[in-house]
Length: 183
Length: 363
Image 1 (cartoon, one colour):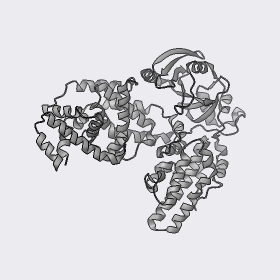
Image 2: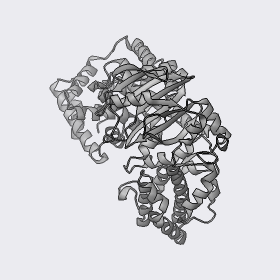
Image 3: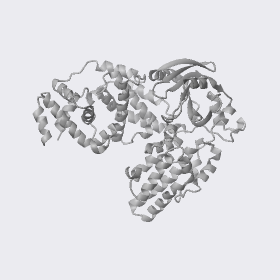
Image 4: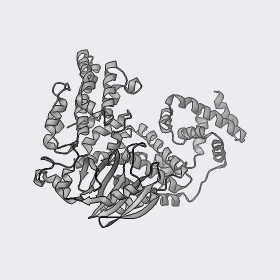
């Protein structure tokens, strides 16, 4: 019976191998501090380990499931109800060292980032999940824990709002981007 | 339509996927992976199992529990002499710290998953539950750091001459408590175990009192304290036969493999194994019959699963967990020829294996 644990270990290793950077990317793009991002990664996979039976088997379903967990971990972290775990200490330190070089974001990206910041949080997260994490609407629904039927229309609305914000901010390519809306 | 805008948004990400993938973190990630896998998963399955929510994973978890855990082998009758217990059970009992709660009224209600290097038992009294866990002592530093990081107050308490560190989690109300200490090469953890927000949990004073009341007992007393829901290997064949008495089985179904493993099983888990194995066999036939257009075979499977609401073991189990509800939902979906979860979920053929944990029943 003891080696009955082995398939779980193996499955978890594969899950970690396949999705660790996706979860880390998700966390790094949202957490202010690399150590916080490392903590989100650690907590998310700790939850996945403890609830492995609930993690969908197909990779395209597992990723939004993991991001849904990461989202809750991040929210708890922001509410300050959870202190940082020590599982991720080394990872956090190495991340911080590697990311210390700073961002080489160009002005145009800065403007889009400002446009995103001006959106309602729900619209912003919808767009980030679609564009940053590359999730499809059904996966976004899983990650946000919302009905799949509403995601497409909300995503469309979020894009429309972002276009308006970009136009207001004097985005250099605003007319071209706005044109897409009319197509 | 929106590719251009999406590309702009993607470019504005603080860090791109390619940059994330280029980070040199392999060793730190491997260390994290090892630390997570070193974390016990025990305790989570029974708690989830007893929640009532109708979800697939719950049922699968309950069913898989029997396959994944249950290492202690006992034979003979409880309350008998030490020699009545199987050698493996005595080996475990000899090795681990045998502690019981000395406060009156606390009984072991769950002890279905333990072995020499990692184990857990749940004590209960009047709806309150406390878990006692043991792990190899080398995990102490990691555990202590981990608990200290997520808990808010700490003090020390003397437990049988060893110093236990007491943590309080603020994640309530109610607050929960955990104590960690080392005894005889083992790291021990006693912690409150709420099954839901409404479950009563011991307060700070009571928890400390219970901690101080822990007593070390002999092998025989410890093994005799196992809960009555534990089905010993020697009884399993008889118990399985009784469970199967009102359950129609498909031709060629081999019931012997259900009780062939020499391990302790909780009655709920054994019930899930028995009803799950029979149901999986019926549903498998039903799926094949539908595919091949064998209406007679499909109808036979539906008729068999239709009786599941009357299976005595499922009715008994339904007071403890969600496995019967999940199984009945699938049976209902077969009758309707459609979807699970009351018609809103996936079709039976896509859902039943993970829902019932069919893969765990493969001999």
